[in-house]
Image (cartoon, rainbow, N blue to C red; front, side):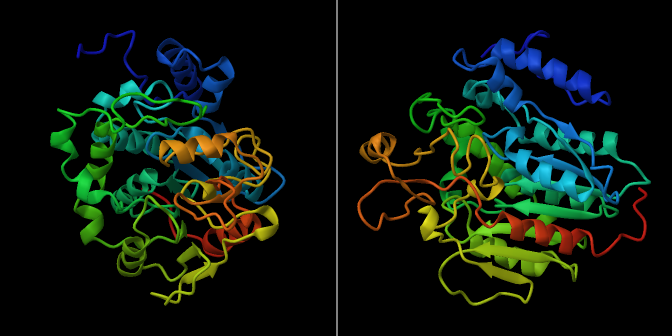
Length: 370
């Protein structure tokens, strides 16, 4: 494959955030999938928001999205954080927001470098600095926390410290040379803010991040809030729970686990919450559903995006054609034969906001200087 020209090179993070956004907008318009609209491009762009001036100022949150996602996944958390008194900022990882083909040649080293650079550019010795990470972004956030002992805290949603597919991902660095796409090529792309098509290289780059030794051997001592689903089809939640107990050591830590089955707690910092809401036809919680409020215009209760991917073709088409869906994680079983679509919002959002306040706003780091 030919190397990138100057015109096609992915815009680097810079100190002037609006210039960074503008360059990215031009890039996504130039390289994006032809069916995506100008509105879709705006959804994928990184954004920043200023804290509500009517509440006490709390600090800054840098928010990192997951694999094949975009900055949009943080829109609802960002709104909540702003209301609580935090400035927020997101970035867009290289290969994301344009076309899945761009993921064929990305490197996780670049994702980590750009996250580190944005954190350094935005760091203010007079403001507590936090990082939020969704899925793969949570792995990057944790790696940065080990580099930045003066960090004020971590917010990790569906952290993908260990995938249930790791036995396949282990060999993806070799297999990508012979089979570059999981589904043989690009598939139907109907989601405006993430990819459905999966290049094997993207999974390999994620796997490389999880294999870095620093977060396996060292402890993270900043206040950390983890929000996860016991029905997550992507993440090995027991691995995450063990890692949380052994490596995240701040006394104010919290691990919120959504699930309907009783489990033996690994630590007193685990908080179990039900994920079934029969009145909403929600069977359980999914990997991505923890990111959105019930009123999100795309993924909320009345959202415009129906997520049926991840199933076999006959099941997928039945889901796309159905009405009156149930909602659950991938592989959730319908109680009456009506198709199950993916749960795409968290009906328990108010509780999550309470946990953000309890974890990050009841304590203050003694010194946020570098």
